[in-house]
Length: 271
Image 1 (tube, rainbow, N blue to C red):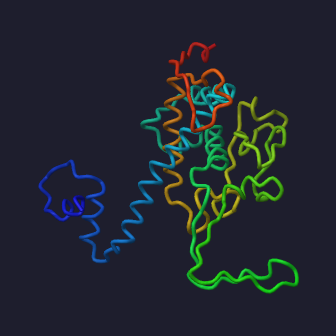
Image 2: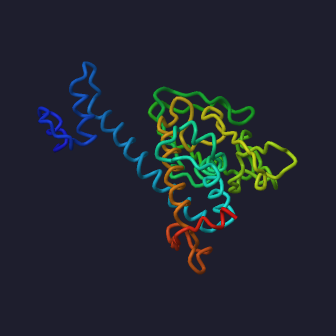
């Protein structure tokens, strides 16, 4: 209510107007105004998707990196060798130069997605056809709420999506976390972990390889921003600190994560 009232007031030249107030003000001025309920839903999606989900994924990333010192060092060297300015470089430049980080992000969001379920609703009767040979057609009635277990499907040990590749080194199945899964070495005779030149091959959001960001027309429009936000944050932390788990930290659950941070010395990277 306070935000709505402030948005309806005339502009007094104050630059401290909140982002939410500006959105509401623009909606008031539009000839094709968005219904209040829909506007609230869109804003909730924006704020939750832009803060809570990425924040949760970052916590998981730091736990994984602290537990895997080899992976942590690999990503640090990738950042250090490129020497680009994270604060001023263009998005295309950043994405092109950090294939290992992008593969790590994609696999992390697939295996530890902060949004493991997708909630949908049937606007009309949906005929799925016979689910078993000789059976009648299965119909999802109009108004039925459907919950898709997207993460469970992506990690299925028996019948995972066929578009998910096996691990490039030991053939890790989709049911296992593999940060190199989406990498391709320039020289096929070299292992991805030791190759100096690799590229990342990410699946299309329409492929169904995994649905961490939704699927098709319902895919999250903020996927690229979330990836850039994640990469920027993790890169800054990796370049500044060396992370490790506390004693017996390998047995700790994600919600009991305890890390130690030490200022990183770049002398070892120069040698």
